[in-house]
Every structure is written in C-alpha cells, then in structure tokens.
Length: 152
Image (spheres, rainbow, N blue to C red):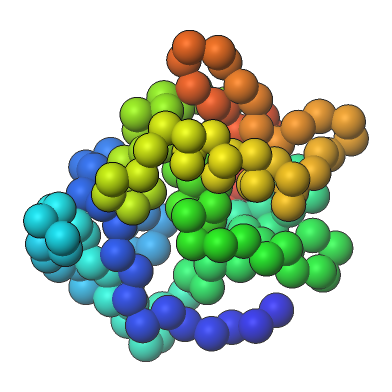
C-alpha cells in the first residue's frame, strides 16, 4: 500500500462527524476555517501520524491516505465518494440520513448529486458474499451493512 500522507483534510463542521475523525486520528492539529462561507474543520496531520486503517468485510480503508483496498488492489474513489464512505463506515449498522450525508459533501450539492454519489460508490465497491455494502432505507437514509474494525 502507498503510504502517502495528506497535507491536510478539510471536512464540513459537524460536531459528531468531526469528533469521530479526531478520535480515530488523534495526532495533528485541528483548526476552524471559513471556506466559501461555510464553517469547516481543517485537519493538518502530524508528520509522524500513525495511519488510520479500518477493516470491513473484504475491504481495507485507509482514512489517512484516502485509499480503499480489496485483495491488494486499490479501488479508486473520488473525493465525494470517499467522504460518504467515511461517514457511513464511522457509523456502521446505523441509518445515516440523506441530510447528514449531504453535509459531508461540497456545499450546494443537490439531492440528486447525493443519489449519483451513492450509486457510483455502490458500483465501485460491488457486493460482499451477495450483500451490498450500503443498505437503503427509503425515506430515512443509508446504512453501512457490515461491522467495522479499526486495525491501527
């Protein structure tokens, strides 16, 4: 796996989501910035940062580098898809509302854009033993189907 370290990670300011990232990746500096008139948390990793890697079903997800792996093959995801993946994986087996998922995407993103993002993510990930990674609960939201374990 490529061990590139990000220069910074910017996430929309959502206390619950941000606190989960802080708890999983504790080394580094967090700063509140205003980006496009939107309160945003900017995370600047420490150069000695330990990688945050999670395992779920047959996937390995590296929160530090933004990479997803299956059987030593990287699954390329765009930034929006990776943000949605992180939000779902941080709350496995919990229904995450469309409104909460829209918050992790770029400001001004439409409901249709979220649907397209979920569709692309499902297509890229496929299924595990016949089950989709992402469950849909019509009128409620989406849920990550499998348990998640932090490896390091």
